[in-house]
Length: 395
View 1 (cartoon, rainbow, N blue to C red):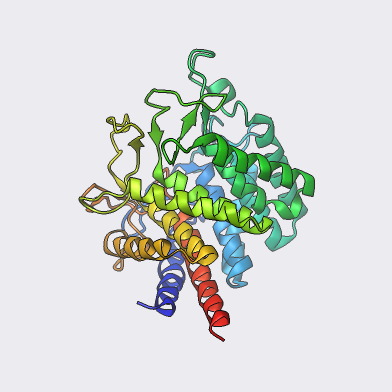
View 2: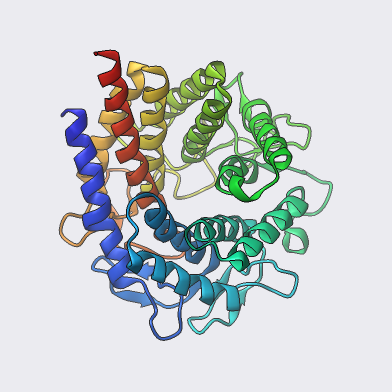
C-alpha cells in the first residue's frame, strides 16, 4: 500500500466513521455533557459522566474545528459540553471530580489529577476556537493547580501509608510533556520552557532505565529501581505514547539526538511488548519477566495501538528509520483486522490475547472520544508530511 492510500484510510476512518459515531450518539441533549458508555451500535448503556472523558471530548471537537474544518456543529457541541462541566465538574477549590451523575451531581471525589489535566487541555483548545476569556481562565487556573499538586497528586485520597515504600509515577510527567504544548499559547514562555525541561528530564533520565532499555511506570523518589509489583511494572502503551510527545518537544528545539533516542526507545518498547504468538502489544508486563499483578496484562487495547501508530509515523518522518515504517505497516494491519468496526463505526476497545473482541462496547469509563480521533488525525497529517518531504527530496 502506498502513502496516499494510507492517508485516505486514516482520513476516511476519522471523518466518515469515528467522528460521526460520537457526534450522532454521545450528546446528552436533556442534561448536557456527553454519554461515553456506548455499546457496539452507539446505544447508551450507562449514564454516569466521567470528567476526564467529558473534557477529552471537548478537546477533540475543538481540535477538529481548529485543525480540520470550521464546522459549527462540532464547535457548538464542544461549547455545550464545556458549559455542563464548567457548571458541575469542580469542587469548591477548583479540583475536578472524577465522575458525576447524568444530571451533574458529583459521585466520585477529585482523587484523579488526570481529570484536571484533560480539563486544562479541553478548555485551552476551546479557547483557541472561541476566544472566550472564561475558558482561557479555567484552563490556566486548572494548569496552575496541577503544578501545585504534582508532587502529591492524590493528596488526601492517597491510600498508601507515608514513608514505607514511596514511589513516583510516570503518568503525570509524561502527560505534562504534551499538556504544556497544548497550553503554550496562553502560558508565559518561561513557564513553558521550565515545564518542558523538567518533563524531558523525568521521562528520559528518571523513568527510562538504560539497564533494561525500557521505561518503568514507577520509581523511587530518587529515581532508583524498586523491586516490587509496582516498581517492576512496564506499560508499553504509556512508554510508546510518551515518545511522540518527546519527539514533538525535541523537534521544537531542533534536538536531533533526542529525536533519535525517542525513536530507539519506541522500537525497543514495541519489540519488547509485541506478542510473538498472537500479535498485538501487551497491556502490562513485568520488567523481570515475572507474572504481572494486573490480571488484564495480556489484553490488547485500542489506545496502545493507535499511539504506536503516531510514534512510528513521527519517528519515520523525523529520521527516515525504516524500522518505524516496517512496524507501522505491521501494527496498521493488526488494527484494521481486529479493532476497526466497519459495520457500526468506531473501534472496539478491548481484545483478548488472541485478538478476539472481549468487550463489544465502543466506550465506557475509560474509553471515550479521544485517542482514536486524535491518532487518526495525527496519522493522516504525518503521512501527508512524509509525502511532502519525499516530494521535496526527489525534485
